[in-house]
Length: 270
Image (tube, rainbow, N blue to C red):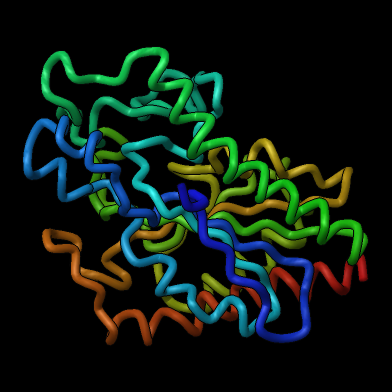
């Protein structure tokens, strides 16, 4: 089996930044795809579409890029392995989801994964991603004295189960100020504010498992999550087409956000 992730090394002088994209994967093993409930599910509507293409400039910044190969319907890399709610009292999908964001079944009745299969998926898909992510953060910390993690996500602009309103363009999360030095969050927020795109920090998303479990400012690891409305760079309905024109307009803000993250950290810790 190939690794369940793809890693792109820096193409310029290395900076202490890792960009993680856990929900951009679209591969599905045929034995699992055959159990999907509908063609609509097989189209993988909850994917963070095209983010590995949108962020393809990351290696040129000197940063490392890690992204998922497999669909979040196989295993959700941004959920804790042992389960448990990230936002108690609010709808959220599980680490091995059986329902979509629209609350429709992913599998035909009786074809849901059982405990042994869930454990196997966690071992095959979840664990290697997190081992590599943590290994890269440890390597960056050892080399540079600190490490920066930017966890990149996107979502359709209107998800009634998450919000009764259309989501803002940018939703930067630092887990209410606990996963990163506040100056780093403020530097990225300043870039977003200057872009003219709507933004809202820590609401309705403040950081998932990856941000929460790796962000440890006291230990020199600073983690931010950027959730972004997909209307900024793609068509939100099937076939979920990538819009080169929108992407070209958006990339300078993403580039500037990452540069602000890195440069502010260098001024603080370098």
